[in-house]
Image (tube, rainbow, N blue to C red; front, side, top):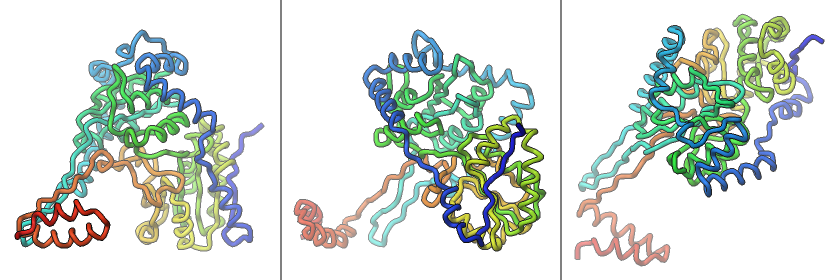
Length: 439
């Protein structure tokens, strides 16, 4: 039987568009109750038994039998050896990508991550002090595939922010270590690394064990167990986000080769069966051309079965009235990756409010952003781009307010604070301000 990928074909002019559109977008972030229960048990067990519990779950889930967690600790020498052992092309690509990611996040830090202060006319100093987190944990997936790019995107902004220690955890099922992942850890400046994964790794990072140090924040994607564990430990530590399936939305005016757009839709669909790829275009003939390209190119893809399942289950090719309507629909979706595949991308960019990352022009494939353009590829999914932002330097910093009230300033602020504090029934607050007033 020939494998086929037929994304849902819709047109905004059809009577039932809204119902079909909403049904195609729907994805439940609710975690399976059995997963939640199992994760709760794992977290509690690691919190109580530490290293012993982590070793037991690593043995059970990853098939990796080790006498202690020190055995599962990746030493800096091993990371460097992995880098030195790569083919020259991979070493150069890794270093080039890392440099671009570092340059982007250094610019980001200068733009928004510096401390500042000013003085009022009476000498009162007001400001903000920006300081890095002491220690963060980065989770790098290591099950179905290896993701050295995730190492760069999580560790480099933390390093640029000035984080003191970066602790990496990466599952290595059956002890299979990916040299590119280890080399990326070396290039990105990871402090310590452990070959553990799953909910038990999240628990170890959150609570600490005899071997794994407790961190202040955990970032990085993972499977349903990792996501459920991050959700549960939030509050004990910070987290970046709860990531859903990957998404791409292409706004096309028909000027880009159809093969390019079809492959861009594939680029997200190949992640997993729940990934979502959508095309919005006012040209019906162009949509036909993209479907033809999908039919022709799909058999050439090594992950064709996953791509087909994703496009058939969650993909859509939507005919819009015009590009303005396409932009409005895009804002409703608030996609993770948004490609503006147009001859005039800067004409439409001002209309786009909600997206994790916006890729402008036909030559800007989403894959370039994923690997080496510079901006972070850890992006909000499932419509959360309406209120969330890409991972960045600011996720590894915190801000403290600076207040130094002068004697003269106390005479101005004291009466205001006194009135408000008495109004709230907090007399000690009022008296603390009043005592500083000149008699």
